[in-house]
Image 1 (tube, rainbow, N blue to C red):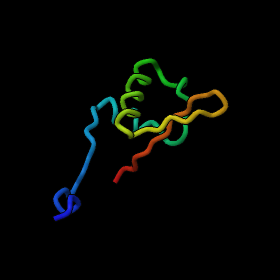
Image 2 (cartoon, one colour):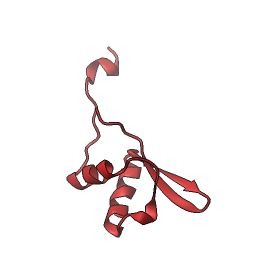
Image 3 (cartoon, rainbow, N blue to C red):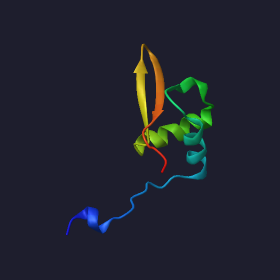
Image 4 (spheres, rainbow, N blue to C red):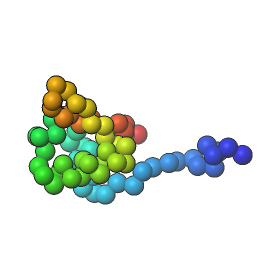
Length: 69
């Protein structure tokens, strides 16, 4: 039996704060446009692989990886 057959729905746990930050992101956004608290939350989301950091000419941009169903 394959793992895909055992796990029908795989979802990464997100706190309410993380969900709110993800909702506000529509495309690549400069990291500096977020508050300090939001930046801490974003770093956690990067570790969970829900957000990607992009280095664009010395500016750090962040972008969502996940699509909502």
